[in-house]
Image 1 (cartoon, rainbow, N blue to C red):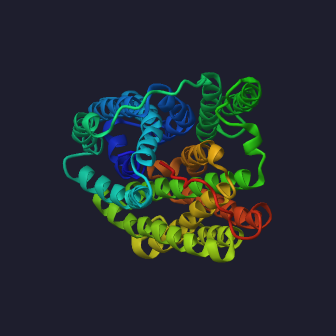
Image 2 (image 1 turned 135 degrees about the vertical axis):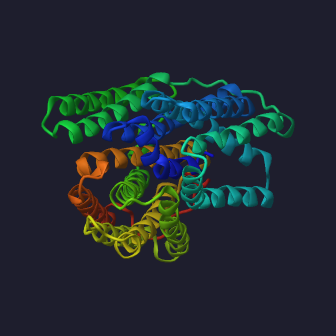
Length: 443
C-alpha cells in the first residue's frame, strides 16, 4: 500500500482536483504532504519501532494509515484531503521500518534472503501497479477509491498479524523528537517556499521567508544532532563520501522521477484531455522502464563500478527529460510523451540503484540501519521536492493553460539531470562498491 500510494495519487489527482476545486498549490500539497511526513519522520519511526516493539509499532502505523486512507476517500474539501494524506505519511513512517524489521528478524539464512527478495520485488513493481490501479479506479468508481481500497486490506492485516508475528520486548532508546521535528519542518518550509514561488514569484516575500526559515531550521537540526546523546542521524555518517554521494544521487533521482509522473499526468489529463485510465496505460512503459533500469544497473555496478553507472543513468534521464521539454500543446501521447518518459524512468531506475549501492558501500552492521534510513529519507524528501519544483516551474500549465510551463519545467529538470551526471563522475568514488551489511529499500 505504501509503495503504490506514491504513483496512484498522481494519476487520480486531476479528477480529485476538479471535484474539490483544488488550485496549483492544493494539488501539489495532496502529493507532497504524504512524502514529506513519510520521509521527515521515517528515522523517528524506526526508533519508535524499537521503543514500542516492532509488532506494536507495525499495528499502530497500519491502523493510522488505514484510518487516514478512509478520511482521504471521504474528504469533501481539499484541506481534509491534504490532512488525510499527511496522516497517511505519519502512519507510513511508523509502519515501514517496523515491517522491514519484522521481515529481517522473522526469517533466517536462505529464507531471509528470499523474503528480502520478495520485499524488493514488491517495491520494484509498485510503480507499475500504482499507475494501472490509479487509472482503473479513478475512471471506474471514482478517485476516492484509490484511498478506499487500502481500508479492507489494512483491516485484514490488522486482524491476522497479531497471531502471525510474535511479540518482541521493546528496546529502550532515546527518541530525539527535536531532531525529527527540525528536519521535517525544514523540509516542509522549503517546499512551502517553492510552492509560493510558483504562485507569487521567486523574489516575493511569501517565497523567500519560508525558504530562509528552512535554512535556519536546517542549522537547528545540525545543532540538535551534535548535542543529543543518541542522534537520529550521526553527523559523522553524513560526512562519509560514499553516504553523502549516495544521498545526492537518491534525492536527484527521486526529484526527476516523481516530477516526471506529476508533470506528465497534468499534461496528459489537463491539456490533452486523457482519462485517468488512459493516463495509467500511457505510464505503464515508464513504470516498467524504472524496473528495467534498476535491474540493469544492479548487474553493471558490480562489474564496472557505481561511478560510470550513475553517470550513464543520469545522462539517459537527461536525454529523456529534454525530449519531454518539446511537448506541443496539441501533442499525442505515444510520439510526444512515452519515448522521453521511458528514457527518464530508465535513467532514474539506474540512479536509484547507484545511490543505494554507493551509500551502503563498506557500511558495517551497526551503521546499516541509520545509513539505510538516511537514504530512504532522501527518496521521500526528494520526491516531495521534485513535485514542489515542478509546480513552481510549470506555473499555469498545471491547470491546462498552454504548454510553455511544461517546456520550462522539463528543460530545468533536464539541466539538473545533466549536471548530476557530470557531478557523479567526480562525487561517486571510483571502483566497485564494497560489501555492506544490509540492502536499502526506499519503502
